[in-house]
Length: 544
Image (cartoon, rainbow, N blue to C red; front, side):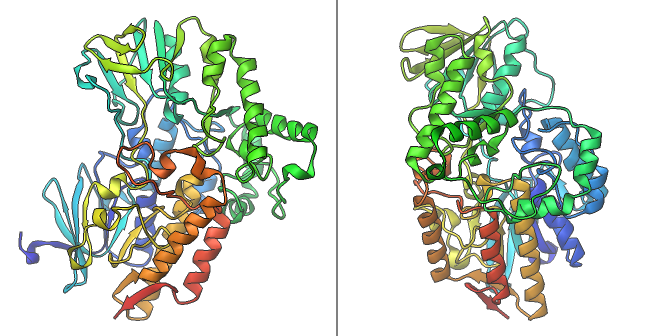
């Protein structure tokens, strides 16, 4: 296709999840032309693909939602404290329709090449379906958990029964009635799916390699009067979510905090008081359990105290002592792998039709046409469910040919691990922005809070460039190196590196072990980004 036949836009966006939708909306406000390419057939991103039984958000609905429009947040009514996947997907569709975004989205299009043309100062974007467009800017809204990771098990493709993958679940109804079902994995998706599958399966075998910490969601239907009272203070609540030292999940009390609470540290209380704090957080439910004692993620002895509390809870809930012991994580500090939020997960192992098979004692040797063979037995199955996680943070970006200055591929620039400035920009890749990319709070935060912050920052940056006659922007090499060093210093000041989790890429064979998210919290990160912008975008190089 000739250059003259290319469609030209100010901005090309990859991905129509929440990040892509809000980015498009803000660009429209600047009067810029933009197009989104989305490989799915509808909006929603992760909530379009992840339709497995029990799929729901682990952040509370009233916090996991957009705050850019007061009308939107007042008119939309969430039904539950933790929204289910269908409701979140419907919310994404509502946003797209309400703000007339669909006309600029091309669905069913997978971007395979993004190449910078130095002479034209534009990005050339091509899709597998044959589209070719250019844009002054290219914005990656590809999500942090969008590339599934399949287990490397002999014979996986030989299974002749029903096989489902949690992150690519069929759009039609799936039933398990009277079936012998096996599920491999006990991460967040599996912990949500297992209780629901167990309700109808004839027999459910859970193949667990690594147990995970999980806390109860204490989910409930939302009371309209409570919601209305909460919404009357929505602006103050949003500010607390955005500027706190934590993850932006917020403490959803009726009255917003007038000022940030000082964290309670272990050395300021006795063990009885610590137990009471943990019990109150457990009873309330949700991932903010990890913040009950402020130094849980920094102090190993505090972390061990919290671990023991959760281990005791598991042993109290699960009737069979051997199963309970197998379900107690012992190879990583609590919180260093994504803590799960569940509805009756541990209680499910008390059902007569549910069995846990500990792969540390009896590893899987292979999968056959009729089931799973372990070192000690053969488990016959009608249905096999894979809940084995993602190639997180970088999988979607490195799945494309992203070619920057001097023909350098992003996968080569990141051969030793992802390097970026603020998780927003990569040296050598001008006018390319990554929303919630490696080096930002991203997966350690409420994603909607981080998405809005990144989109607003990018919008401000593009406005600044237009006002000052700049045509391109690129992260400076030294600023990028300093930021990467800072991200690692912050991580090394916590217990996160001890987790051996997908935060470090440890679940993907051959992936460099680099701690990818920024662990200092959404508030401090936002402050840094704002200071950099106020200083004329310090650490960036502009061209006129």
